[in-house]
Amino acid sequence: MADVLIIGAGPAGAMAGALLARRGYEVLVLERQKFPRFSIGESLLANSMHFIEEAGMLEAVLARGFQFKNGAAFVYNDHCSEYNFAEKSTAGYGYTFQVPRADFDKVLADDAARQGAEVRYEVEITGVDFSGDLPCVHSRNAAGERASHHARFVLDASGFGRTLARLLNLERASDFPVRAALFTHIEDHVAAGAFDRQKIRVSIHPEHRDVWYWLIPFSNGRSSLGVVATREFHQRFEGSTSERLWQIVNQEPSLAALLVQAKPVAQVGEIVGYAANVSALHGRGFALLGNAAEFLDPVFSSGVTIAMQSASLATRTLDRQLRGESVDWVAEFDAPLKYGVETFRAFVRGWYDGSLQDVIFHPRQDEPIRRHICSVLAGYAWDAANPYTGTQAGRRLNALARLCRDE
Image 1 (tube, one colour):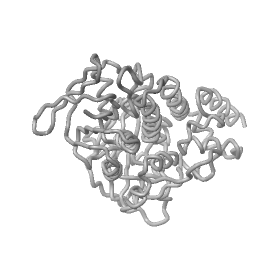
Image 2: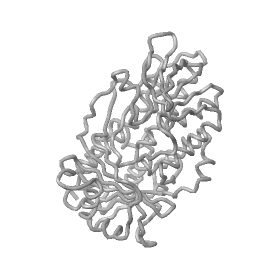
Image 3: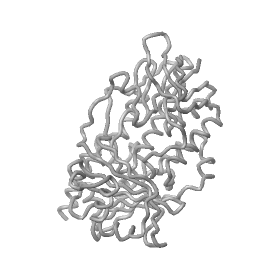
Image 4: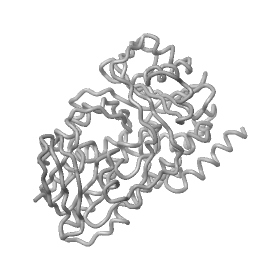
């Protein structure tokens, strides 16, 4: 019997596994897929470096040679606004990496195993039972062999698989509109100096401000390319997913010019209606981490950072519980995690209603305010000293946008 069973070996699961194994617990991680495997969410935020260091994985990540990232560049028609993470208001890392997730997630999972967690791949969770004294998780491996696993606690880090949310009927509809993402990897063949490879490039459709593109350079000459829009917008275009992606890319002149020599190296993927929510983040014998609980939107690359923060908070709380201390999961896990999630939620809403774009592209930005905005873009969404975090973030962003429009 394991002390803790973790569903999923992505960033949240691997980091939770390492953090608990470092504390001396017996940890079993069950992953449905075989690693390495493709995943989106490839542009990390600077705050993620703190969590990577906390989990003892910094050396392994640095050794992999991922693309250095120091900020984000936003492009709208002839306007370009760059944010350098070193120019934030919150103390902490001012850099991070842009990573092919297949490689990055394998590095983290391997390091979790090195630190003592047992990681098993190609194991599907078929059922769970939390009615007894100990949680029981039922599984089936690639050979069709079934097993039942008892543990003192279960952490669900299954990402978009949302295993416990699905099996325990915790899924709730997101209040975000249904959007779709088309994405692929390319050999970008962009001339040296044509754009800053140390930043994610986020560009906006010249006529539809709610349609945006990502270009995430990697260290091997490849890039991740994607476009996000409503389903209705995507349905205006005919053909295969690849044909639709490139038709939409060609509507953004500066991006199309950058990628004129680009060659696809992967099939085009599509995710529709990815925003998700749950009715509870934890219950008797379990807690939900990262995307297994809630996913907002890819625009600010917040998913991995939220996943890592959830792993950090949950393992600290669980460690105390397993040692016999009285813990309050709402106060020690739910509330702190939701503080940052609400920050990103406000920024996502502001992005799509145009208010945050008005702030980002304002020609005369107040330097202290710009540093606060930069902190959130760098992932420091839990900094209570920043007036643009927490439940107040949306109201203050809207007020700031009105000032920008009035000038």
